[in-house]
Image 1 (cartoon, each protein chain N blue to C red):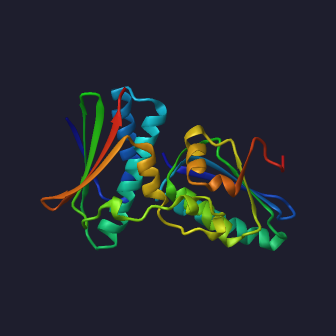
Image 2 (image 1 turned 90 degrees about the vertical axis):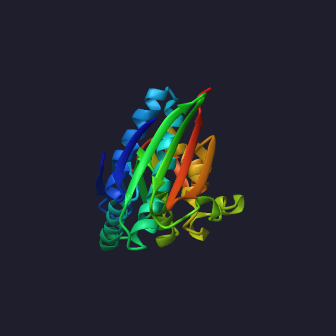
Length: 139
Length: 113
């Protein structure tokens, strides 16, 4: 298993994407799947930083664990921010997504992009930490 | 990688072209929004903005924070035509999946050039 820790600030978004790009490259995933992994992580980490840390007046880290388990690349993002299950947020409906831009609610797109680009997504709150697990199938 | 933005305004204030190079995430989306607001102010001095042309040829990444700036542009100026030039496949995919394609036009060349 590989582990790397980043500070829980927006400055970390680009280094986190770069890191995941190299993880995905080493795992041999397609360019598209690599992009989707980076996008999903970016959306989740952004939520953690803006709402779980900054808005709550907290500071903390983002730790990324990655490993290949059988035919899956499993990336787990750990943080000590306010407990937040991304799946608890309401997703935009098909109807919302077909609305013209000027009639749209502005939120919810992030989690939609997370789930759209991954083969599996899991959330767990355990021992004071949020764990977001992102899975890509390698075959 | 950061984001660099170059803005060009037509003399009559009808067409604003933003070349976006790099990556748009929650940090750099703030610069994108600021630049867009500045272009809106600039165009108002010259006339009425009809086209917002976003050249995405050099854009390698865009999160929902970037998509929200598109929505902001449209909600600020509902009559504005938003043209997107040469988005990369993954960005085009996000525009399609989120239904933003209904409100923007993908073009291969800047109507101004």
